[in-house]
Length: 426
Image (cartoon, rainbow, N blue to C red):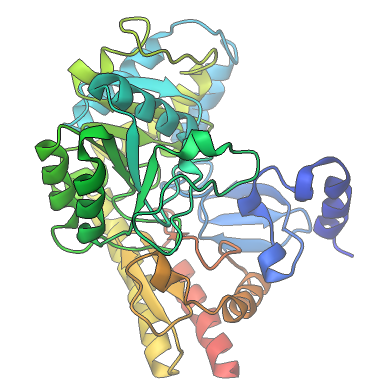
């Protein structure tokens, strides 16, 4: 038995399912999770000493690679002065000013401690600003585990208010309406029925929690217009895409100006951080300046802010970073496509910039329904081979691969060689 397996047996006795987040579980691929001891650059190492090329990157935020020297140094420097104050600090102000500078749609921003908290708060302020209660989300888009967001659409696009988790009262979800990603007609139908009651539409501009699914041409623009026409707000959940697709995120990439944006761990250099921000008139409603209450005792933690501020400044001061990252990513994902074609694998691959996903289905994946046609057993076999040969990817068909700036020709070529050998063996 490996040390990871031993630790998992111990963990299952004291932690539900043996993990502190379901995304870490390997149940769907029939394995015990690998327990990690360290990460540096493009590599991650488990407690048994196995080293892997890291395509998870702490679920996205390690865009520079792990333990980046400058980020690491500034975190250690910040620790010298204390780990937490629960009080206002200068670094919070610097971080807020930097994000407002980098993302034109944001005039004010509030730091929180997770993406879930950022979304929950963004929805509350959207309701407070509009005086309306209903929210439209999209089937397959994940916005954290707050009650209102744990809703399953079912077979009909008009279905609403069905909790997707035990412990969520139906009343908490009755104002959540579900539409179909990339199907604007489904959004129009919801506005036709509920338009005067819809406070906001929330969407992942590039869906990255049902695999990676790209928005079709003009889909986001149409959402912007229908929100404007109905005095509803558009919330872009950029927990995954923020500062990854570019210095101004997916909204800059697609030329969309949301009313509110949510961010996650990338603004903390991988440390537990989130934020939500938007137009001044909206954000001024947040307490203590306004009547929409939201608080966080440890929000804007000085160590996390030091990590995030350093990472964002590196990205800001190196404009060629994204060009290089996207070239490396293209080499990987186009190489994967060639292998799929060469060996006639019943699979398809979606990618944009440094985000990508292989789906074990021959269908074009453009929404949750088409993503669910994937053969999860085929993915499980693929996953086992890849991780046993040093390629660390998410243990789920429906998660993204993240390329980091620490990766180069060596890591990409090694990954493609392992993938090719797997499909050769089939």
